Length: 251
Image (cartoon, rainbow, N blue to C red; front, side, top):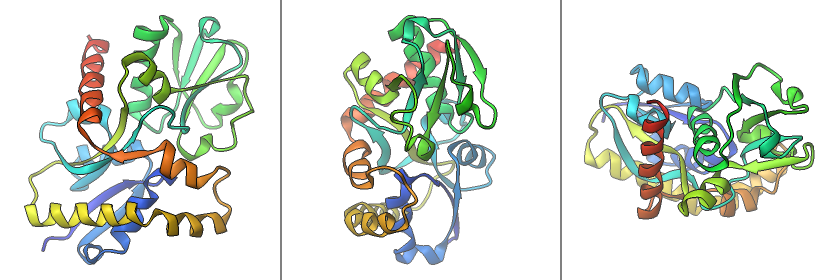
C-alpha cells in the first residue's frame, strides 16, 4: 500500500479523527501532519499532501477534488468555536477583523453580512494578537481553540454556524476530508473505518483530554453536541448552498 500524506486540522474538534487514525492499522501507511486549516488547504492545493481535512471554501479552487469520507467538521446550530465578537450590536459594527486561520469562516461571515445581517463593514486581515483590537465599532472573527474562555470577554458573541442555521434553516459544514486524486476503494474504506472508530471512542478520549487541563471548555459538550461529524444529506445541502453564495460573493 502507498504511504499517503495527510494534513489534519490540529484543533480540538479533529482530535477524535486524529485519535482514530493513530490507533488504526493505517498509521503505518500514512504520514499524518497536524496543521491549522489554512495550512491544510495550502498543502492539499499545492500537492504537498494527498488528503486533507480542509476548509470547504477551497473546493471551487481545486482542479481535481474528491470528498472521500462520510464524516466532516460540521454543526447543527451552535458550533461554539467560530464566532464574531463585538462590543456593539451588528448594526453598529464598522470594521471586522478576519481570522487568518480559515478561509471558510472568513467567507461565511462575509455571506452573512451581505445576505442576512445586511451590513457593509470594512474587512481587515487580522494580525497577531488581534483579539485585543476588538474595541468600539471594530469586531473580529475568531475560530478554533482560541475561542475557548472568551465567552464573557466581549459584550456580543455571534456564533456563525448558528447564524447560518437561522438564515438558511440548514446545518453548516466547515471542513471535509478531500483528496486531490482518486484513491483505491480499499484505502478509502479503511480510512473511514478509522475515523468512525475515533468518533465511537470519544468518551475515552475526552477523559484523557480533561486530565491535561489544556482546553478551558466543556470538552464533552463540545465534541458530542457542538460538533456534528456526520456528512449526511442535509449537510450536503448546506454545503451546496454555501458554495452558491460563495460564487455570488466573488462576482
